Image 1: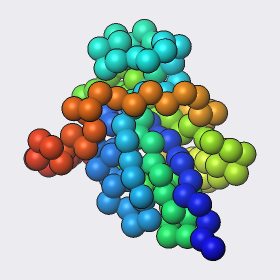
Image 2: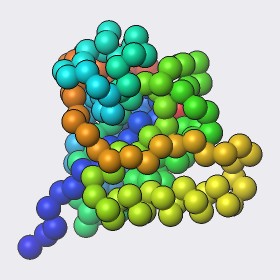
Image 3: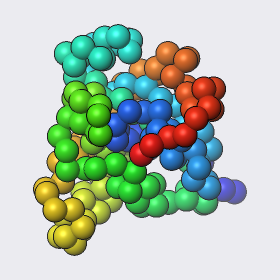
Image 4: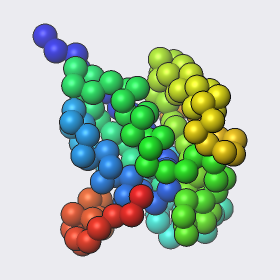
Amino acid sequence: MSEPTKRATFGAGCFWGVQVAFDAVKGVISTQVGYMGGTTEHPTYRDVCTDRTGHAEVVEVEYDPAQVSYSQLLEVFWNIHDPTTPGRQGVDVGTQYRSVIFYHNEVQRQAAETMKERLQASGRFKRPIVTEIVPATSFWRAEEYHQKYHEKRGGSCVL
């Protein structure tokens, strides 16, 4: 009997491009974009964009651990954004665009912390890594027009 699917949640800037990156990973069953880490119940995109709710734009990843490991998903996360810029990714500025890993269990927390420490020590990044590693909270699914945005709208994705 195969292992059940698992969840991982990452914030790495605008969730549209982050979703594209994780959808391309073999072993990822599904993704959805939404908001996590804030204080407002049922936030909307308009709420989160005020930079007052405390939410981050995130991608929730459902994956098959027999095909892709959590560590492999972390590698994708670290490779698709700049984890040294607090409250921004590229032209997107605000705490909703922060670099954050929301862990769902102790194994995920330990893996994320270990990889962050290893990357910091490697010298790959010239500035300190500011990625938050915090417990997952309520996931609020974003409005339907945000789901699979690049598939619906076409065009390239700059990460």
